[in-house]
Amino acid sequence: MAATAALLYIGLLLRPDSVSENERTASDSPFFAEFELTDHRGMVQTQRDFSGRWMLIFFGFTNCPDICPTTLSEVAAVMEGLGGEAEKVQPIFITIDRERDSPMVLSQYVEQFEAGIIGLTGTANQMAAISDSFPIFFERNEEASAPGGYTMSHTSNLFLFDPQAGYSTSWPYGTSAEEILADLQERI
Amino acid sequence: MQIGKAVVKKNHLIKVLVSLLTFVGAPTSTLAGSEDLVVEGAWARASIGTSRPGAAYMSIRNTGDTPVTIVGLATPIAQMSEIHETRTNAEGVSSMSSAGEITIEPGQNVALEPGGLHAMLMRLQSPMQEGESFPLTLKFDNGSTVEIVVPILGIAARGPSE
Image 1 (cartoon, each protein chain N blue to C red):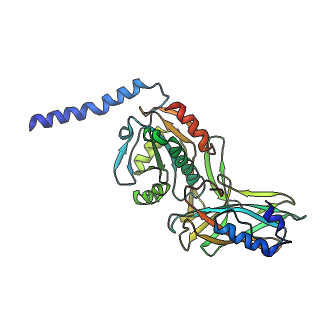
Image 2 (image 1 turned 60 degrees about the horizontal axis):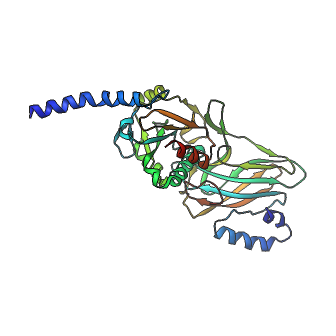
Image 3 (image 1 turned 180 degrees about the vertical axis):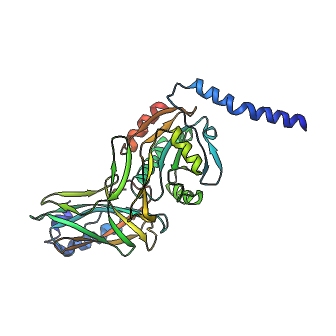
């Protein structure tokens, strides 16, 4: 029993760092995706949970009726276009509006796109860590006419990370699904 | 689009055509109260229940010879609706705000499309469900109104042609 516990302990000690070291040497990316957030099913997820797959990450909020569903619809079209290669890519939607976007709200949202999108939200500290680890900007804007009295400004690029969680590329808002798909197929 | 141009002369036939087009989910073009304003290609995305806002898109053309300003929107499915605009700056940061009044010059067209202007439908009274449609009234400064029927596509729809 003690031996098992000790092995488990050693395993836990080794695992994150060794994986992390491998990740860093396997890729010469300028930066790596790092996060610990709760998904739309209530499960804690980090970048290590998607190790071995490309991550297609978009930051937005569910009260955004225009560019967020527009981008996620492009993502859904990209995933469909990938066909058999879709399993190599995990589409992820990270909310930058944690106050309104609980895991339950996210599940109502991402599941409607039928593209296997994982929705992620987190605590204030976890969200602060997100803005440090990703080159993104977001802020709350008071807007009397908006639902809840505010709206969010946010980086609207779609980011691609390689199977080692290293940054690969990003596409600005408005890039068509066809262009993204062609670029993605060259990379994966 | 030919439908819009033909409306004045063949109003009845067009209404029939429009109903048929609406039935098959194609872009609609309906005029009521103004012969100079043509609204085409209207569509909306399904909403997430009633607690999140919806958006509708369309193209509005002024075929008259005087400028016309859109001063308001109304629909029974939302307590508040107005035209909003998404802007994306050089750093790739997008934000959204009320677009205010929009003036359409003679012969010009204003496109409400993803990533730019959109009819923001707030405090929904009923969920916007795929396959259904809803009436939307556009109010102009010359006192005219145009009522259109907006087909609701899936939340992952990319445009009126799908």
